[in-house]
Length: 339
Image (cartoon, rainbow, N blue to C red; front, side):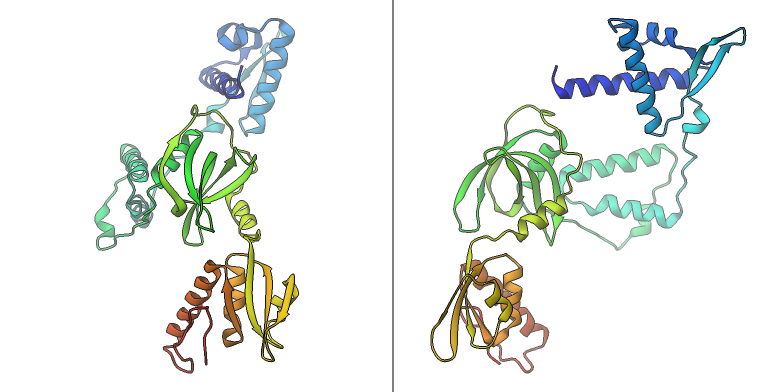
């Protein structure tokens, strides 16, 4: 039996036990539970049933579901029955203030992709059926949108929900494209971009992929529900760890006496002339751009192209933010600015 099948059977058994104990008007003896629930009736022995039943009781209690134990007959105090008090497991009626209803309507309208809008519409429909009045005119004039321009979003989102392996072509930092076989775990909007985290089958390790770098169609490969997502997986941790990993070597030109932090991280340094030197250091996307841009005219990004472009963009934004005052709007082709 596969792990997914065993998990499904256990879930069904626990649900059947909950329904039996909640619907009973009187405590149910253990032998009655065994004869009435199929999973218990199939137990090969009394000992196997006892072990299964005790594990199920402990698990339900750990989930916060109180199972009461009561003597069935005062004349035979060794015969006990089990029951779940509905009053202790039922939620009170939920009500919403007008501003809360408006917020729910806005949230449902925020997504513009088909896969999410269907879920949001279903949620609003359930609220209406429960008697909650949804007056979307309260949000008139407000049109929130969370747009997903990446064509890979819908198929990847569906694969994450289905826990189904996928194959796609992926463009790396150096521009090369390779085919990746991935078990998708989660989708995360991080630092303004959508990322997929999951298990890279070919590399045998956890990886993160930017959806904007997926080339061509996303193909499903394998059965839905064929793997489990690690219980301790946190997408933000995976993304931060991968972002911190060096993505090659950066070459930066520095004025003598400047850029001490970059010099300390450098593996190679060399003098060019009496004014400039050049360093090679691990390229950490985002961090290296910030460090170089912070030095202004005292540093020049030489390579890789991503670093040069990142520094140029950061400097251009700084110049635009200051309206060009005190800074000459001159960002050269290597990624530096003159004052």
